[in-house]
Image (cartoon, rainbow, N blue to C red; front, side, top):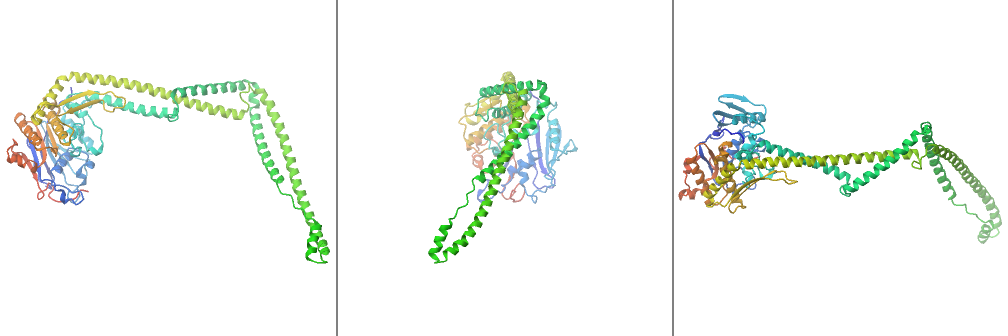
Amino acid sequence: MGQEMKRIRINKLSSEHNIFDEICFRDGVNLILGEKYDESITKGRKTNGVGKSMSVEFIDFCLLNDYKKSRIAKIPKEVLDPDENILLDISIGEDKVLIKRNTKNYDKPIIMRNGKATQFEKIDDAKDYLIELIFSNLSAEEIPSLRKILSIIIRDEKSEFSDILKCHDVKSRIPDDLAIHLYMLGFSLEKYSEVLGTINEIEKTQAVLSKVKAELTENGSKKMPDVMAEMNALEAEVQQLELAIDSYKSNEAFDSIEEELAELENMLDQLRRKQKVLKRELSRIKEMPQPEQVDDDEIGLVYNQFKANLGDAIVKSLNEVIGFKNKVEEFQRVLVNQKARDLETQIAEISSQIRFLDDKYSEKMKIIDTKGVLRNLKSSLKIYETKRDASAHTKFLFEQYEQYDKQKKRLQLKKSQELLEIDADIEALSKELKSFMNTILDIHESIMGNRECSFDIKTKNTLKGKTPIEMSMRIFDDGSHSVDRTKVFIYDMALMFNEYTRVHHPLFLIHDNIFDVDQDTLVQCLNYVAKQEELFSDFQYILTLNRDKIENEERQKLIKMDVEEHCIATFTKANKFLKCDYQEK
């Protein structure tokens, strides 16, 4: 299963104006060595090291990685001129390919194939062009994209080599993608893509289903059977109201008096509002305080106590004033009483009008009233419309719920069938998978000294699972930071050297600072790849490493390869990759 991939050989990395020394690559092991990173000089800010990891970034840049997410985007313009073309000389099968890319027009690379240049206006077109060179017979369903292939070939150093499936910066939280792993193991990507598409449809359907259910159940405060009961009851009410209205409309008198009834209702509403206002005004008048009465003899007695022989004259004068005052108060009482009588008269007239209109309304309603279902035409029609809309909306939501629930079940059945097909592929590939497992066992024994490891691949059909296939690998005493890195090394090597997987492999592999492991494991890993040079002549393993990690082992001749012979570049504080000090943006 799957299509074979042409070998990709990296020949040379350079730049048009020699901003760094060109690096020429050879078959077999290629070591890029650097001094140990000195944290004491950073002084709290991020600075670049000697450049071994940056050289790998430039290779990946030319192989059309995402510029904005790369460290190259952080290099100051004073150090890397935006117009400076970075050149990567590679071979794809029999084709000689030169890729040119700069940071100014990073999305418009130039690719020269056998001396013929092509300028691309979009980065995706350039990726498609390279894929056409890598695969002889194209089938989009059967081959992974260029960057998926390279994600496992040039793992991001920030992936920390913590898991065989994780190729990107652990902080980016990019979901695991098994496509390239399955492709190299010989599986059909078409079936994998189909089941992923089905899972995506299930997720979308479930999202809509949950939203509809939340609205029906008022965010879970009701159960679905209760919703069904309420919906049936509401529908019955609406049907009863419809029958009543239909009965009205079947009466020949209905059409002729419908408008008159509505007009009577409006007139009654207006009169009742006016009656209410007048009653409130009358109530306020009746609550007004009565004027206080003043006794004339009492006034005279008080004044006689203070004014001898003048009291009678003063009383006479006061009586005249009080008389005038009483006349004023009497006039006010007459006005207030008259206003109250006027209001009472108006209220009585309005009450009479209301009685008349109400009797008239009742007489007309008798013509069309049916079993007391609709007592008030205007309000009843409003109730009917409200209940009808509520019933229709609930029914619509419930039908949607049933529809999406059935769709979800169909999709889950489809997913199960698709997984059964992948299970059949796993069975059909048992020979290849057993061979791959044996390759892992051989590498593990060469490095760890035992065969206590495993590799397994199986389908996983869970309700909420987004990954339909589970791929797991265990090695002796794994789980620690350093042993997990060793596990990734073993897995990557097995893909490149197993007889079945290597036909789906570009046959080059880059590990940037993978060996944060114990010295014995480092030595055994280096000795393993040195041994592969004796067995294979068609691969490239590019490794960045701090020289001081292997100096003692070199002197003791524990490493079975000539480090100097395999070293293609060495960077130090005095001789950095970009030939200068700078701070990343």
